[in-house]
Image 1: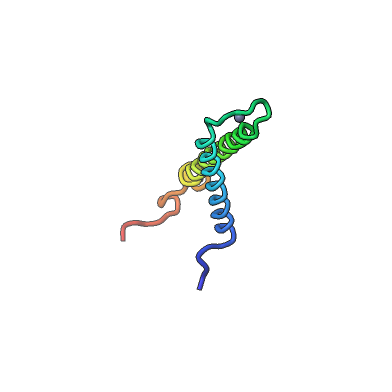
Image 2 (image 1 turned 90 degrees about the vertical axis):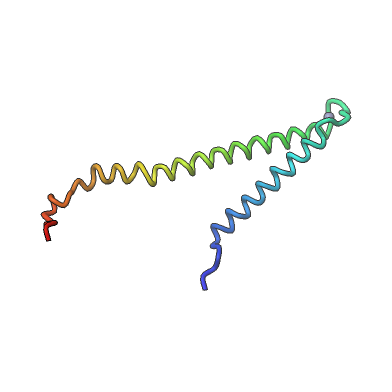
Length: 103
Ligand SMILES: [Zn+2]
């Protein structure tokens, strides 16, 4: 019996789960500590807020870039490549192949 997931699918699933947990936990920390009593210049909460906001920004940009790359790869795969393959690589027809269609 064939397994349900291979190694690449497990790695993708674990990576997606880790990114989701980091994104949600960072967002939760930012929302819960946004209005804190700041101690001044070396406030540890402000430092942690900066790290969380940076993580949210990096993950969001990476997800957006990956989504655009995935969509553009699919568009190229299913529309552009077959079009150019049919247009330039195989300019044949039934008449060119001398196939009779009268029987
Ligand atoms: Zn602070």
